Image (cartoon, rainbow, N blue to C red; front, top):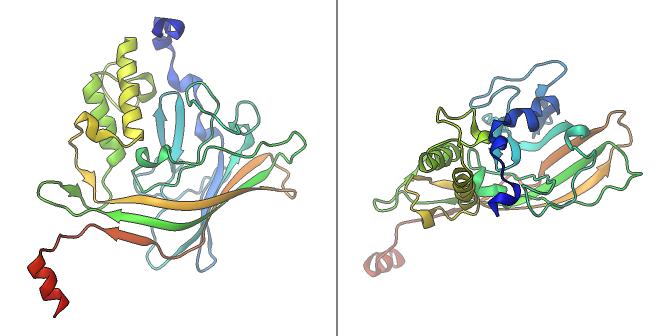
Length: 288
């Protein structure tokens, strides 16, 4: 199987030279609050991005997994403000074929476009559950269009920090921990992670195959099967419901794609893991 597509010269290719540079395609992004304030967080033409914690210029963090390159944006928290809407404008040329892929079954072999809302620094946990099937864009459709998501029924799960099953409070870098664990187990860095480690580049197919397998395990949420011992976050996104529709932007002169996330509810459901109660405690609470 390896011989069908493996060539040692592949390792000499600079991954950054042959993959998407998102700096070239992100036009702008921002948010709307419940006070109807439109806050522009980044605009490529005016370079007025805010300095927000844990973001790299122009305000997003990049991920590379297998042959897939991704970016994620942390929407900044502002006290007493509620988020109603988040939007991002992309150049349509971000798609190599000029058209958004309708569906891809294999992220390595097929063109694919995924949108995955996720809890901060928990991208691995949600990327596999993201939306990746889209309506086919007809040839005569507008080159500028809006992908509008309506988000609702958000459910957050909060684990209890127990002696025999610890969890980490706050917003720990769960994705970073998984990256470090994979690199430690492989002993080298695959070319798509050349910027996040000082380890030598992997030089054999078996090393790249192991890195890919561990990444798959992380994406499918099966880390316990390989004795992953890092402390997991106490809070995580358990469920989110959304519908999405395409809207042709007939008033735009640019060939841009706008992704809009509308939060239809200001509240969310929080499921907490609590201490179990023995019969004596239950009876005492019942008749208190």
